[in-house]
Length: 180
Image (cartoon, rainbow, N blue to C red; front, top):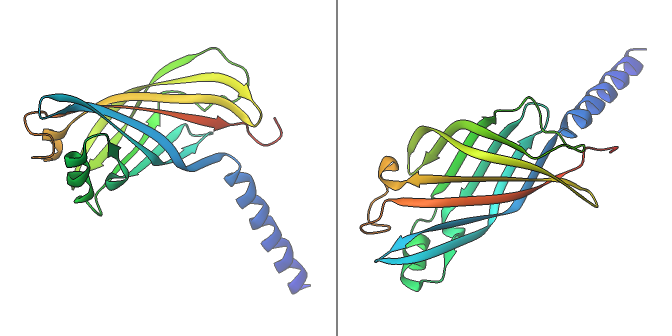
């Protein structure tokens, strides 16, 4: 009897874990694009290693980017970025919506507010986001965001001499919920 009760308990916890996990989407290969100025010239940087954790039910977003995965078309800037081994950017926040709608919906524009951690500095941070329904295969929507990081506020110095701001954009596919 005790063994049967334990088996039922374990099964219940596994089922609950699976149903909870079904409301969370993760990717390790999201794309992020940054633009700014380096030595007086415009520069664009890209990384295909954006990690995103998206909780559909709570409308929470967590982003992580390892800085040396960023690549530009400028060799001297790439060398500077590679010297930042171990440096990461983290964002954790809540989208200003009740939940992430994966069924058909009009374009939703909202703010995302949370905390940005970069270079050992933690600061309140917000940016604009858009969730656009885009049903293709197992994809339901495209989540995009754009923001400006003031490097001076995060004590990043000498990375972009004479320039302090970087414009950042990301687009992320949002999968359909199981059963949709």
